[in-house]
Length: 467
Ligand code: TYD
Ligand code: MG
Image 1 (spheres, protein in one colour):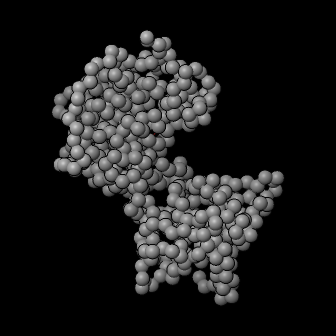
Image 2 (image 1 turned 180 degrees about the horizontal axis):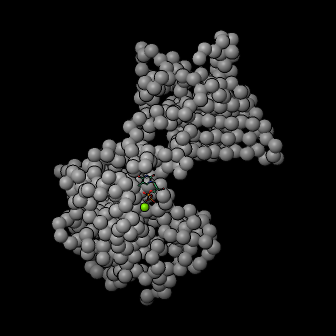
Image 3 (image 1 turned 180 degrees about the vertical axis):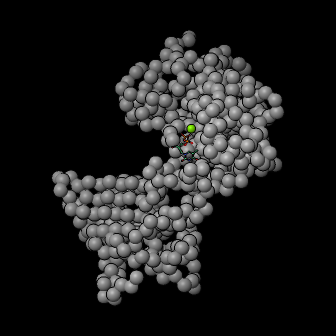
């Protein structure tokens, strides 16, 4: 009965193959498939002998429920991203590129929790105790009672954190360094990472400690990425940012205990991460409103409005195939908007290179940014600067119609607060507040937008600009 146990597992996405191949069918990555002896040990699933099942009592959907018990860090941007603090007995994955600041963030969280009287254990598998201490000193966390261990073996870690009083929170930095005696494959492979993570999750569930697992995101697939454990944990947070910029965004992509569209914004300083409570001011900081091709988008991140500048550069191409380059937005969405501009507005961009950039290294995920992108493109192509005090939002459909988006009132309110009384928004927005003093222009469709941009620029040229 027992089959050969050799499998071939993609180190990027975890897809199991029966034979080796150069390219993974699951994720399309090359050279990520390696031979993996299955499986055994912690987390390997049920044993070989099928046991007779035990009937559990069925219940109903109504009944007593308890609010998940949480521990707050007091770092409000972090608490916001976790949906109100770490939940006891749950496992959170914090993923991100190497060097982005995951260890820094978690050391600050550990220190903050420890100051609030919680028992925190920080297990570092990547850095030696001395290195972690150095960072703690830099973060003014050295005086706290955070307990530290430098260990990578799963069994040893479990024995360590299981000893003595139950910890309130355990940080494992990182899951890629975990290895267990019970899994045969090499450290850093999918099997090892899964085995280790499963053991940690089980510890959290059994003891009620909150478990924070750090995972590096890798493009090369040399070590198993956090994607293979995303489905096992209760919440997934990604720490993003651009190395060239100081600020970092903690984005919730999965949360069994809270909303998933929240972000926390931080700024990396020489003394660790600082909270940014008003991100719009940061993203609009270096704005030069006089140049063509810049439009301010009034976006939403979860419950929070964020104003950010979209910059476009449209220039005649010298190549056979014009270039399309996008930073901070979806490139297929840009192609769509270019196509709609060509088809419905007669704006010809086939002989132009198009570059699109979201200021400050920020990444927009909302389709509501369509209108801002289209405005920036038209403005750059025409060489006409948009009005400096106007924001843009609205989704564009293939027919060229501008469709309403959610949370219109919050977007307008934030824009007014930050000195943007003007707005161009979808015509059918139901929730536009009445009687406010904003100059709001509703846009039916894309041709309407194009003519308004041309018109307002013409008006600007007639009246001499004042500084
Ligand atoms: P780190 O937390 O080690 O990243 P990760 O754990 O995600 O790999 O952060 C590394 C970077 O952060 C490093 O380039 C130095 C920088 N940094 C600061 O700028 N200020 C600080 O106070 C600290 C601790 C780190
Ligand atoms: Mg680290």
